[in-house]
Length: 107
Image (cartoon, one colour):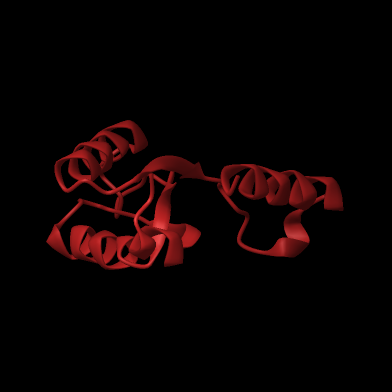
């Protein structure tokens, strides 16, 4: 059974993160968001390069462990790799597919 405070919270927050590496600032952000939302979906960047040395799987593991340790309700999802410009999409089906994925995560 939910408490009154939990029922007043909004259902879902989407929080995009890079976490290269995960640090206390990220954890404090998630703890702060958790005060106003029932669930957090962390949208974790999949980018890897010279400025992004840690791969997605490792950063996802770090986040999942931190969320469990600090009792943050939610999960981690891969942030789709977007082209540098929306004009790069060949058709609107790509955009619609991404929108549907986010809508499904919110339910």
